[in-house]
Length: 311
Image (tube, rainbow, N blue to C red; front, top):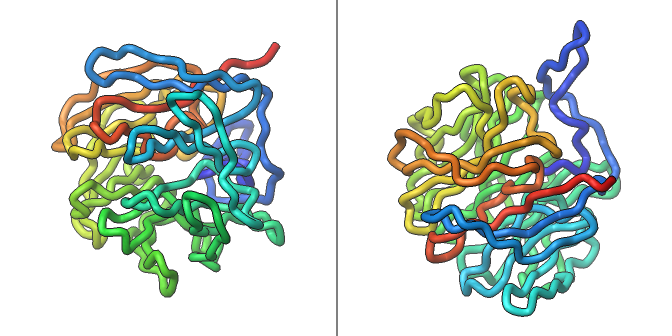
């Protein structure tokens, strides 16, 4: 879920941070950080720093031709050329308050984004050409936070607050009536399709801590996939369908329903069939590091953003 207009899922109660679902409008986040755009080899763990930015960038998507990474910064969407190491802004019309929830269409002809509408500051989903162009509103109801695009190109999956509860929804890429897939107290977030389109992976606090879950694409048969004493967010399935990457916060470091910035976190890998995980990267990051699917097309690398605090 993007962070531009949310103050977090935290509420002060008896001097402690406790989760709730109250959200308020907020200005575009800037954060006083240096951003490092990196890749990591999932077999060797070797990290490669591609570029350093003296400002906040977030959430790289890898294009299917392996030539570019798409990220957001200061409300805009950018294309980073991996060979030249140069960034160019993607024209998006009036959609200039994008957060870190953006997904490429399977054929990479379009990008769907979560844009914080100027009138009320709430996130809605829009689609426009990846080459740049006029945006089309998909979800008039807000807030809605994009996370997944079905492999057949027909459907978007997202987290949305409706009637005081955050659940997983889907909607046709052309808009229309949304379909609610989960109905669980607390937060369900980060829905993303498996490459075969049969499942949606997501994260949920329904068992206490934030854990990774998987369900059928119609919302049936939810299964918990991680069980450790961490808060695990944003599962991303590799293009070959074999592995799942996710980001983990230490149990005592954050509330289960919060995924803040500027924390020591881990990027972990597990088999899509389930089982034990392994830590791929330890870094300073969190919000913005790996909110979206950033697997390389050959399933050999992940792109992510680490951060350094400015002095």
